[in-house]
Amino acid sequence: MIVGVSRRCRAHAVAAVAVCTLSASPLSALRAQNVRADSVRQPPVSSQGVLPVTGCSGQVISDIIVITQPPFTDRLPRDLEWVRRTVRAMHSNTRDEVIRRFLLLKVGEPCNQIKRAESERILRAQPYLVDARIRAYDDEAGGVRLEVETRDDFSLLFEPMFRGTAPVFRGMRLGESNLGGNAKQVAVEWRDGLAYNDVLAMRYTDYQFLGQRDELRLEARRNPFGQQLQLDVVRPYYTDLQRLAWVASVGGTREPMRLLRGPIEQNAVNVRRAYGNIGALTRVGPVGRLKLVGFSLTREDERTDSLPLLLRREGPRPDTLGAAPGQYIAQNVMRANVLLGFRAIRFVPVRGFDALTGAQDIRVGVQVGVAAGHSLRIGPAVDNDRFLATNIYLGWGGEKWFAGAQGITEARYSVDRDRWENVLGSGRAAWYFRPAVRQTTVLQAEWAAGRRMQAPFQVSLADREGGLLGHRRSREPGARRMVFRGEQRFVIPTRFNVADAGLAAFAEAGRLWAERSVPYSVDTPWRGTLGVSFLAAVPPRSRRLWRLDVGVPVSNDQFKQFEIRLSSTDRSRTFWRDTRDVERSRERTAPTSLFTWP
Image 1 (cartoon, rainbow, N blue to C red):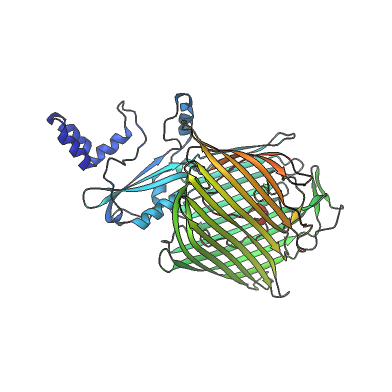
Image 2 (cartoon, rainbow, N blue to C red):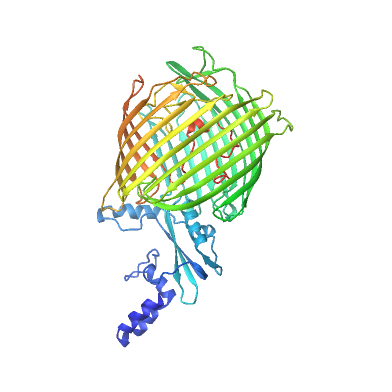
């Protein structure tokens, strides 16, 4: 910065030397970034282009400057400027100290390119940030000055819930995802339960618990016919540079699990669970090609009522319509588990894959996680079993195209019955192709399967996440599900800075298979849906994708119907996450991935 300004000073008249010299001072330059000519204070902006850019290659870090930006950084057209003013008035920028705690670099230390890139990626992984950049600038004293620039996502949570029949207004979710800029999420929810209890829920997450890179998660929920309580304290495994990660959790649920059974009205069985987990991992091996070794102690107590119920609009009734689903085996176990992992991964920044135009970091390489446990007969824990869970991920590609696959499997071996039970697996394979800045093609396959199930389990094409659009009223259950999806997405150019917009055409097809241990399961033919989607990302380059999907079902299912669905999701932070109908049947203490758990 000083070099560039001094050259300009020599080109001016002698009378301007004093002014140029004053502007060459770093402190004056930083102040000048915040004040316009009319003395109105402005948010700080990047100094890129003013200071000479250097590499991060061992120079001593003399200073770290953090610049946090609100959701809208660019001025909007005059008629829409009120949107920008309103959002900024309601929004609190993420605090500087929150950003600094995620940095792996400190003042006085050598500037390391790997630590710089990993710090940038960790910041981008935070759900309340849209993007993050860390740049190094020459301080003209043999060192570098780091400039950390982040941009916030919308922090207000406001989700009204409506339905097509009276009462039209069903409920609301209200909260703040970055309370006071302190990396805390608070949300409350109410939903009309009709003949049952109203849903009352509270969720609190502190992404920097006690000022550290630890997370505190608390969720309390009263469901229409049950409740849920969960507390987690976690040090996530953010980076290969990290030495230790750990988790401690406890919780319990009581809720009915609805079971589809074809043309007969669905029934439900009440499931009670209590669980706890404490464990830790440590790194072994070099960065970029490392191994993880750890240990955990888990407790699981699960019981399913033998008498099914009909959950009708006017309230619960005994089920007298058809055959009962059968007897489920209770589980009361404490296990000692060994955690093993191998990882040879690098991260590639891309845009427009899972987000409309936003940035994300894709994993390229191989990642394997294994959890193996044996039961301990201590106190009320009487089961004698072994447990095995695996998570395998493969990814390759770059900015133009990427292909990845991930599979998660778990199984329990009963020593008393001498057989494997509750064999549950799910996964996803996907191919992304982005030939132009405004075009993205996505082809993917998703699967889920359960075998020898001794716990309640069903999958269907009616599931909102794992099923097909236009089949939400489908009544056919299965033990295995395969769904193929294809989407061609286009970004619509716009001169307004309010949001990014896009259009997509999609097609999807899926089917189910039966298995004897899954009650009422049937084989179905292939069924499909064709449709178009209207896409939006607010603010621009946000990773949260709003979709208005319009789907026309193509199948012989008598319950198919034309469907319009509004959704809002952020899928840029993880390649695969279990659908709700699979997740509810998994053991609560089994880690789905050693690299996101702890």
